[in-house]
Image 1 (cartoon, helix red, strand yellow):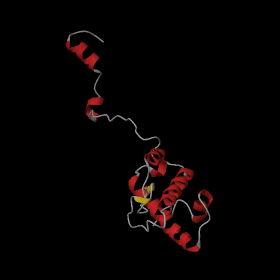
Image 2: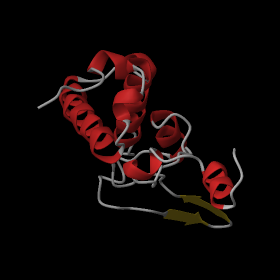
Image 3: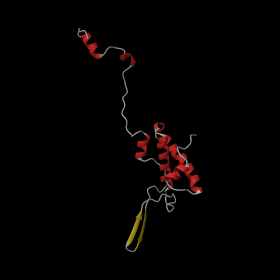
Image 4: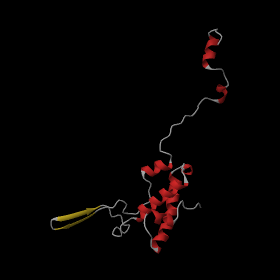
Length: 143
């Protein structure tokens, strides 16, 4: 098993001090976030260590930033009304899921889309003269 890309002190430096219970949960989530990156980004090894650490921490902070009221139970919206006043709150990640944003995926893949070409010409054809020279010799002309 490979280690996590970051540790608890990295998360605390980017977010806030954690309690003892939060630290143990954070350690597990860092391992899960690192595994998520390895499993979903085939080119993760091309990313710098600093980028891997930053993104692993961001994934964990999103997961741990679940309000206590949500309790990880999947609450997606809360509406409170008192007389003429009302308030509505929607949690961005009520279940505390681990996920990568589009920007994080782009950072891990070097910007996202890439172009490449594949030479489909068989090797035995590459050894022959160029088509122009071949056509000239068929027409009786010297190249």
